[in-house]
Image 1 (cartoon, one colour):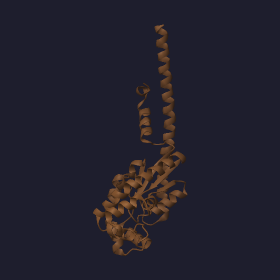
Image 2 (cartoon, one colour; image 1 turned 60 degrees about the vertical axis):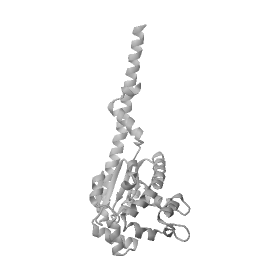
Image 3 (cartoon, one colour; image 1 turned 90 degrees about the horizontal axis):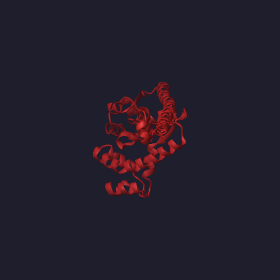
Image 4 (cartoon, one colour; image 1 turned 180 degrees about the vertical axis):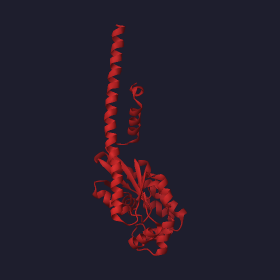
Length: 256
């Protein structure tokens, strides 16, 4: 059997193939705290050639009027969480889940399976058609389990006072509402411990771009290195197979 003749490097490649890691691209999970600046960073990554998959848009899609997900939410939370035309009452739901972690967990348990299914489809499609860096922009990357689809994870963090100001300005919330949203989320250490790279965004766009450029350079190096390594491993495998065939041929001649 050929498998036993594989070198350790070839076995690593076989495992990567089994896991669905395509060396033409790298899936980068992008997450972080609300108000940390993920959207700003994501827009810049798109400008410099990265393919972006927006998990927030997918989360909106799965709760469209008439969807199975919106029906499950109505059953669990009650019809008062739907608008009169059957859409999700986002304002009412936000007031509930950002002040009650148990309710947030309930909502996530309903939505995540639908989101994950659609995310997987989007990622598979991007991996088959795009080369380079594929960014999965997902605020709940770890909580939903979507990090399992990523080769690397990047988190964006920022001081609480900066995030508070950004959320108030961006979403038109009161200070109390914005504070509730922050307290419903994980602290900075949660992201630091789970990420390959962490970018601190204190508001300087140029500094943010420099950090992003450094990070994407590292990823492109990994892509190039993996491509070269795969070519080397393929050559090694071919040599091993040729050696094996030659040995079998020699043994056969000796028997004759």
